[in-house]
Image (cartoon, rainbow, N blue to C red):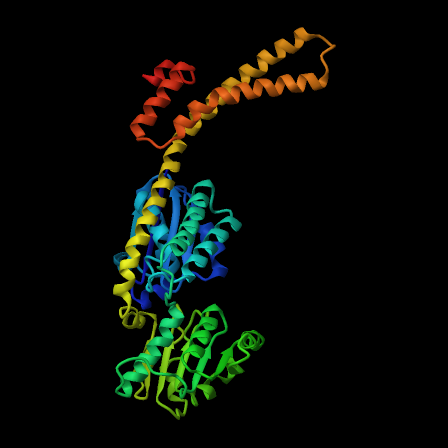
Length: 436
């Protein structure tokens, strides 16, 4: 068996490719079912975020397994394999384990150390378990990856002051407004007429950062206006006017800065729509939705500037050098955790032999116990029988403890295989022909 991962991210594919491969939560159960239908895939889990789609699997044959996953991705996205393949990466075994742990720790994020990815890995684990697509191997890997992410954030400064996608979007707005006004740096958003479209987690973070950067009032639009009002209620010190999606056009017309972050699979705003709106201000769109909420053709409007998640790199690069130094410390922790997982994985090779040895000794124990009890006669009480049975079980466990511990301890594969052969031969666990 092998652990593999196939996917693409902000490092390998532009947003126009990533948005075609985004798998929303409601379709993940069907996607997991489709992947499990491949004969070579034993366990599988999906990580789908605005910056990546990654499919982790336990497979019988690593090459066939990777091909099966790529086939699924191409079919799901509707993108020809020849066009898609240059953007895909795949890792096997040690590299796959290391990659997931780095992702969970925030070391592979657009913004180094961002915290949201850890909750997304937790959700990947939960969805895999709920849909019964993961088993003991991936559950162990995912669980250890989550704990590794927590460990990195608690034992290093990587997460301290780390910006999120949402905060980077707000900072990008500050930077662009400053550049237009001849200011080299970030400016306050106090005078901006701000519109936020969407009322999910990303929008919550957006509003938090907008408030900290000087925004004192904004319009919040969402398809479900009650959800927008609930979100607005969490910011009592900020004046938030909630509107329904049917009022989008008239509110765009009075805005100067629009942030979008919705789960819509199709663009909400395109050039045709903007051209029908009587704009009262020069307008900036910052779209952090994937799939994108704003069509790329909006950039052709003379009074509009539009930015998406790939444009955040301009902001991220400003403090990347400092964070890279901290990341080196974090990466050493991740590599240690990889070794721990791989040692556990290697120890699984001993499990069949250990189980066979335990089974054979248990059979002997029961046979000898039955002989002894039959000689004791009817005067032997039930309580005494339980005591004797517990005694014999304890003896077996004591005998097995040292060899089992040795067989499962960290060691080279050659050393473990040599030990397993000795145990198999000494206890006649396999035929002599199999040993030779």
